[in-house]
Length: 265
Image 1 (cartoon, rainbow, N blue to C red):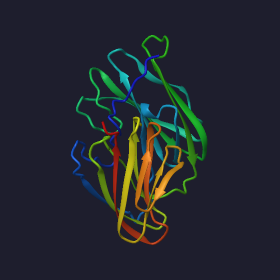
Image 2: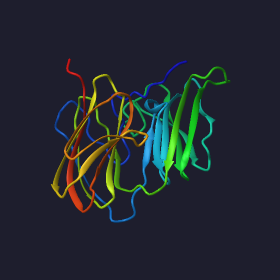
Image 3: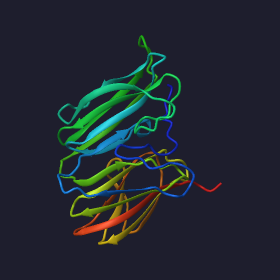
């Protein structure tokens, strides 16, 4: 079986904004302020790195599966196991050409006739289901690759003021974000890692007013680490991680720095 890799140097760029990537340790900064309107819903992008994982989302969230496909050869990603439609519905499917200079979320840098096949899903009701896609060559034959994830949909009680997927290159620039959190609504930053041996996810939180904590969650919603200032989490596997800045009560203004270190050579 041929395995396709999403050419991610470490982490995939995401949806609402992107940080500058490179070798310099001079970080870029973007300010986000908690909205006073209804809480946002998540729009998570997963790719080949997340194959075999469990993704935890909430009712109303969207989950996009972005996978490489070789359009020149005529193969395509087909859904071979549909999710439970009462829990997770398929909203749309599409293929998009990608240039070698692309940094679009979920669109790795590709060459030749490679495209990104996108399957957009929406969580309808609480429950657990799974979806499987197979890379099928033209005219049938043995599958070239298979992608499968389990999806746990939680009730829609989860709330956050801001969600952003970040592009953080291992050993490169640390991404700085500033914002304000209040009440039960937190800010969520999503990072994607190839989980190279010895890599560590490093988070540094400072508050300019009030008190806040930072928590790192796995793709299945499991708490991996939590602290009021610093987290250095050794990465044992590839996948998606969520960095959540929140306050137990009141209001807090913060700055968070997120980076991935690599072993010294």
